[in-house]
Length: 193
Image (cartoon, rainbow, N blue to C red; front, side, top):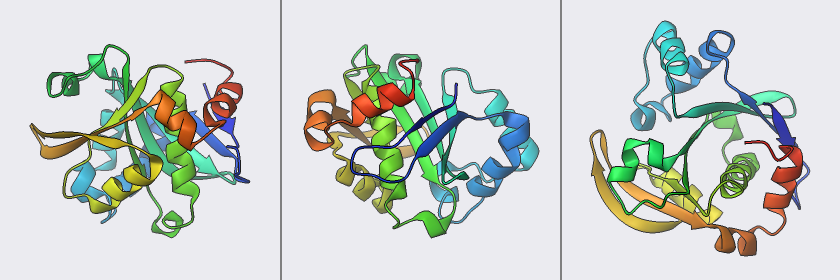
């Protein structure tokens, strides 16, 4: 289900569309092979391998995010209890997880990626009490991004592919920091999951 939202105090409408492996695989492949993405996603592989990766996702839900009709972001959302991450920290039954990236370097620093993060968090927090991510501890840009969004540290863990900072945002803290975001996303997403 595709949904759109304009967050309070924003003028940019974001659209979240489910990724279609065959149609969107080339774009995702391009982004996954960019120098600012490869170290963190480790998916600098062929277009066929990216399409297979996207088609093989089970508990991860992939999204393309657009602003002004142009795709710029890739997001994966998931229920943490269905993911191996749940075994590495004190996960709650309703924890909701995410991974995200911004493809075009030209979008960094525009403020639009922060709007994407706010919308992702609002969408997840409408489904659970806490949103969680686990960036590589060496990814300073992502750690700063998460800090600006209001996520706080639950500690560091050794995952099979990286040393990760487990970061979380509680619903009450999010609502205080970004009032109205969850309501705007609920209206834009039509209350669907």
